Image 1 (cartoon, rainbow, N blue to C red):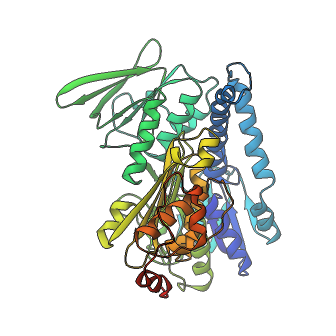
Image 2: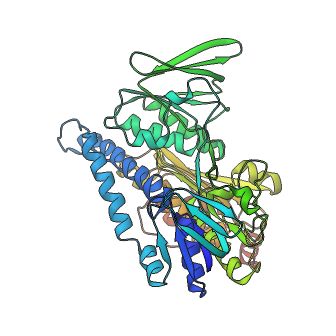
Image 3: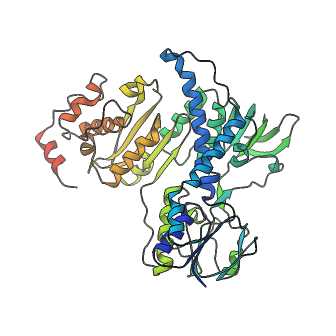
Length: 494
């Protein structure tokens, strides 16, 4: 009997298998398709590839502003899809994680079809494998939620949209979460007429309110129709040129038509065929696999990690969960899951990213100050002609520590990554402001916001503050003037 069987080879499963093998367990990794899971084959890697193509189109249209004469960019969609396949293949072929898994002696079974439990210790695959293990880790990920609406079969998912042979002339995108806005943004850049529908009061409901408003404004400015609080969908129906969505708001029936309708209505655990009942594994109230703080399911020898748990459905948390689930599977329940910094990002146009708490969430338990630097007033963004967006810091007044960072615009994700490091290190804004970052850079906007917050908290930030955009832009006023009280407070250990 195998010591540890891992079902699913996405980020959570791959890390779980590697960790279990590193701890000396005889480990088997089984996956219905290819190694890498949704992240490599159907998620961040292909989506980011298409987003890069969308960005190149945007860059090409900016060349004339810098005296570079070119024609209007023309998208060869079949060639783009070929490039997408090349990228995915290259990523999988050069995966250092796969190399480590093989070197650790993990037995990997790919393309074996769906797996299901025959009993608490036995898993059978469609390809006919019968696998028995002392401990099992479920890492099968999630799938798009299907809606019980007449005509829903006429709609597409983000996967089918990314696999089109041509960019459609028009598109309805239903769902303003992270996946929906990325699909909408990509195909808008590709020339499709896009209408984005969100049932709630705003798109990107889990992001900071300023982020959501800015991204929506950017979409509308680019010519996308964004309809928030649009009502309730009644049905989808086929038309001569595509699909029609019928919906109702305040008793008034309306409709919208396009060549294709993409529905992104949330994510559910991909456990329909697993036969969890045979293993004694119970779902939670949302249908995800129920786990405790050690990522144990209701069956003590079975663990779960990644999207299937419904906790934080992103790659970095999935990797952490895979590591912890494997550790506890081998050693017993010794390492609880801890809540790290909440990080998210969207490769849209404009790009957005978050690290830490939103302003609304921070105000629930902290006395906070916010500092915002707008991209139309900083040198690098002006130089590059990327003046849309801002960088906002959420700071606790008493400690001057950074609670959250929210960015919209060029290099938003990279800026937020640096903020995540600062938050993890427990840095105060005056400490961040004193870091001598290169000039002029996008990351420098983070330091500018920190310096502004430090000044408003009456903290001394020293010589570095005088270099913030040379001061003429007006982010800082008299940064060197700090009272003795402020200097003492800045020196108090955290």
